[in-house]
Length: 156
Image (cartoon, rainbow, N blue to C red; front, side, top):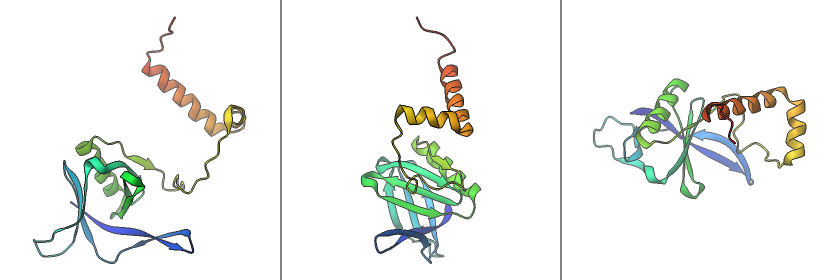
């Protein structure tokens, strides 16, 4: 069980806004069948506020203290945990329980939703490869992983 705050995204005039935490504290539980959040109270009879079956969960993203559970139809739930380590433990529990691979994003990097998607084509990728040392390093790392996966054997 984890103590969390549920976050919502404030929208102003059709523009995506900042995340805003609900005032109440919730507890989050990961079971083999579902993800549940309940009001955090002293009453032992607190019922689940949100229950999402694992079959509806498409992916999980971790970014610092934030954990986003993405379900079918593009809907998602974002919660904030006490610290980044606890967030990683929650994601690990989901990985073990549901056999899902959480996407862990760097804290300083913007989310993919906020990034501009650009179709570079082959020429654009080659140009980018030539001018960006970090991108080139990532490509070499991917190549090394593929070589290792296939045992560095050459096929005939």
